[in-house]
Length: 265
Ligand SMILES: C[S@@+](CC[C@H](N)C(=O)[O-])C[C@H]1O[C@@H](n2cnc3c(N)ncnc32)[C@H](O)[C@@H]1O
Image 1 (cartoon, rainbow, N blue to C red):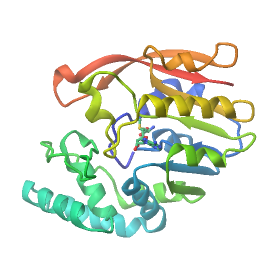
Image 2 (cartoon, rainbow, N blue to C red):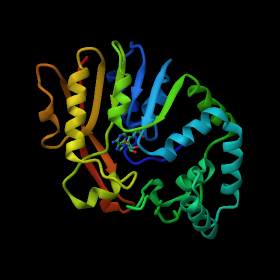
Image 3 (spheres, rainbow, N blue to C red):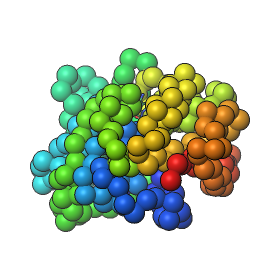
């Protein structure tokens, strides 16, 4: 995946590929993040969206001009230093127009590869410590990713807006941020200064139940008390999967957690 993103689901596709459907019309992913499932599945026509504007702008630039993006980020990676990182972070936070080159450079070199904003909407992650493999891509990779995005509609919006495009026969993959009740998980969920709340999850469940008759839907979330209560056993299937999750850079931040898969096909 081009961005490092908390909650990325590459592992899910690698280990449980068979749970994803083979046939559907459009692919819809309203919590796009790093897009692991989309880039693995490579659907013919897709509607991809996320509430993070800078992230969606990055995919739009990757789709339209992969060469400039690659060259710009590569140049910064080659001259990377702590001083450069903080200078770029300041420019990124202070400029009105978002720069995808800065966004991707910061994402690849920041601590833990996490995108996190404070309440003012400023990217506030410190520089990472790793000196190697900051950017394991070539121009060819960027051209391939751009090609994969050709037949996609990319939108910066809330999931409620994104789900309005769903039509009969579509497949919707829903991977919302985890809602948790413990403070320690907050940085993991704060992708854009606003934390995904329990009432957001309730509204998402309402939407999924509204669309279940006409679309194939797969939801992945923490398998915690409460999440499955929104879905009846008569209409939905459930699978629980154990997965090592990294909640912080520290060893004690690594935990086995159960991921719930809730689907209707
Ligand atoms: C768990 S991540 C998705 C990870 C993705 N499946 C991957 O493999 O990288 C959840 C995403 O939901 C986005 N998000 C948070 N609240 C949202 C909302 N209300 N509407 C749409 N997207 C939202 C976040 O910006 C984040 O990118």
